[in-house]
Every structure is written in structure tokens, then in C-alpha cells.
Length: 274
Ligand code: NAD
Image (cartoon, rainbow, N blue to C red; front, side, top):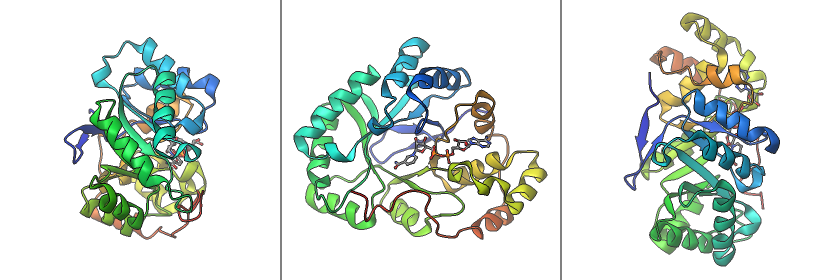
């Protein structure tokens, strides 16, 4: 079965599933992304801060896949926030990726104490209007940050990429996104591969479907309507993670996973990261 797409509020569409490359070593990135492309992945999530945009670019150049079939996201790093510095950082990222346009560019973190995300967003709007970015979005933004973008620029992000997994389900923020026509992307969908994968309730559901714990958790995200891009450098896992389009979770299974929410972050708190 093929990977579904979600239509964004700007009319563009995004594959609901892809590959994340945070912590993928720079010298393994081209090979890892090439493996993913061979297995049917078309959506890659990287960031300037991951230090591996060049590897993603190499894989794109070597794959020979028509550009319009790919969906490539990168992110503006915190210290580059500001109007002019954003324009320069965009050129640097697209140069490393070897792309003349991005499918999605995200402000990586709001860094509210720096108070530069509105100027940054104005540069994003300009790059979008120039046709150099298809869709513009944010990551780790709180409702009040998004309200400021709306109030000061009149342009809402089409995506908010936030930490979501069964231990941090983010029901309120996901509902805020949904009610503002913002698609949620769930980062660290597997809670970074820790103890969640050993959870007993997940194991019961996995056994029922003949799937792995990782596949059940990824399927849970799809049922919630989130976009996901689990990370792996291991070919067998890259294949396993994509094999989630031939089963579904019923209401009782979704309820069982809902009980696992502990409101526990693995990553930084967007209110305080600068
Ligand atoms: P993840 O939840 O995708 O977990 C990845 C880890 O889980 C792997 O390193 C591996 O140890 C394990 N794993 C993967 N597949 C497995 C399988 N089938 N079976 C068993 N274990 C498996 O963690 P992540 O990398 O933090 O998140 C995914 C992506 O989200 C990142 O690569 C990045 O693109 C994005 N991200 C964004 C932000 C942000 O601030 N915007 C922060 C973190 C991550």
C-alpha cells in the first residue's frame, strides 16, 4: 500500500510518512537516505543544525527521482533568526541540499526570549512569495507564538512540528493546531527508541496484529492524523517502519495507548530554549 498524502491549508500536499535524520552521522546520511528512497520513502526531514544537509543533497542528486516526487524539509537554526540572517541561512541550506526550492522550511524553535521569530517569519513569507519555498511552517511553537505570527503578519504556518509520542501526547496543542488548520508533525514519534518500545500494552496490540511495537506506535500517529518521520540508520528498521499501511488500530486500541500519556518531554521545553 502506498503512503497517503495530507493537503495543507496552502493547497500543497505532504506525504504523511518519511525519514528523519537527526543524529544520523554526516558520513552515513547519503547512504541512509539512498536506502530509504529505494524502499519507497519520498519525504526527508533534516535541519541545518543536524549537520547533514549535504548528505541528503548527495542522495537526492544520485537517486534520479523526479524533483516533484520528493518532499524535502529543512529548518532554520536558532542563532540565524532575524530577517537578513534568515535569507542567508536559506541560501546556505538550499546550497548544501542542491535544491532550487524547498518543499517545507521550518523555524526550528521559537526562542521567545530572543524575540526574533516574527522578523524571521517575514523572511519566510518573502521566500515563499518568491517561489523558493512551497510551504512555510514552524516547529516547537506554542499557541501564543502562533497567535503572534497571525497578529503581526497575517500569515499562519501550515505546519507545527512538535514532540509527540505516547508518553507525551500533546492533546491540547494538537487540538490547537487542528482548529487553526495547522497540520501537526510529530517529532521523536518513537520517543527516541527507549523504554516505550518495551511497553506491555503496546506489546499486546503488536502481537494481535503481527506487527512490532515500533510499527504499532507509528500507526497510532497515523490514526491521529499526524505526519511522522521516524529516524533509523539500520536498513531493516527503515523497511520495518514503512510497513504500517496494511493494518489499523481500533477505538479500544487507541484508548489503551491514550492511557500511556505521562506528559513527559524527551526534548527541550520551547518556553525556555534559546
Ligand atoms: P525517533 O522517535 O524517530 O526514534 C529514533 C530511534 O528509535 C532510533 O535511533 C533507534 O534507536 C530507534 N528505532 C527506530 N526504528 C526502530 C525500530 N523499528 N525498532 C526499534 N527501534 C527503532 O527519534 P528522533 O530521531 O528524535 O525523531 C525523528 C525525527 O524527528 C528526527 O530524526 C528529526 O528529523 C525530527 N526531530 C525534530 C526535532 C525538532 O525540534 N523539530 C527534535 C527531534 C527530532
